[in-house]
Amino acid sequence: MKNFLQKVLNFLLPPRCICCGKILDNENSLCPECFQRITFISEPYCSHCGIPFADIENINVKMLCPNCIKEKKHLFRMERSAIKYDAVSKKTILAFKFMDKTENAKIFAKWLKIAGKDIFTLGADVLIPVPLHYRRLIKRRYNQSALLTLELSKLTKIPADVFSLIKFKPTKPQVRFTGKARRKNVKGAFKIKTPERIKGKRVVLIDDVLTTGSTVRECAKVLLSAGAASVDVLTVARVYRS
Ligand SMILES: [Zn+2]
Ligand SMILES: [Zn+2]
Image 1 (cartoon, helix red, strand yellow):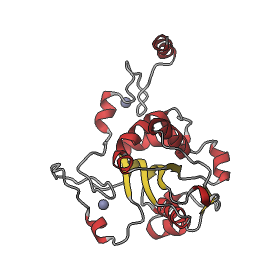
Image 2 (cartoon, helix red, strand yellow):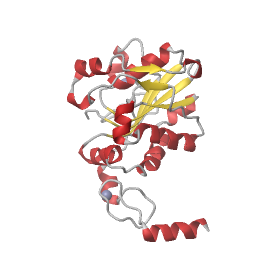
Image 3 (cartoon, helix red, strand yellow):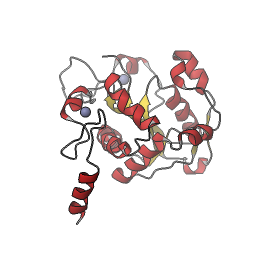
Image 4 (cartoon, protein in one colour):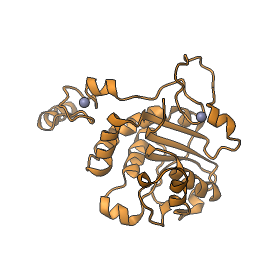
């Protein structure tokens, strides 16, 4: 029965490529051309921050990138992302963020589950989205990161908590700034409403795009000071040079 309904639904609303919109003849979320053009992040990558290593064969050894070797104290336990944020993936992400393509959350959640395998193997207790300030939430009507978190929670059976971490200070969009100004823009913008729900938990922070990491860093600081045991970062896309 479910198959029949799916067939009827596919006839009425055929699945489309989430990148270019072309009608697909199967349940894949990307057409073959877009699948070729999107860069899925795969091993070998830095075992801490997840940045892929170019020109290195997969030798099955845990390696760190130069930045993670330099960094003495790590704020995050691990960082992982599913795809590279570039001109191709940007279109898909922006449509999800601003154009009500909320059904894409299901597809992205599948990618997050694969990208986060190292995190889930180590163990995680709760998935928490990077929050929006309520004024922006009213304007946009949904928090794309919360949608991702709820879908990922269904797939992984790890509980989601979309209430404990809040953004209480409105900030300007991070895209307007670079480096230091980005850090300053989000400084002190987040707080934990219910620390008792965070204490001792291994938290996975979920977001759509990881750019410089200023926002997730600020979130991680408040989570850790509320007693979180560890914080991981898991995002759909990530900016990096290759
Ligand atoms: Zn396509
Ligand atoms: Zn690294």
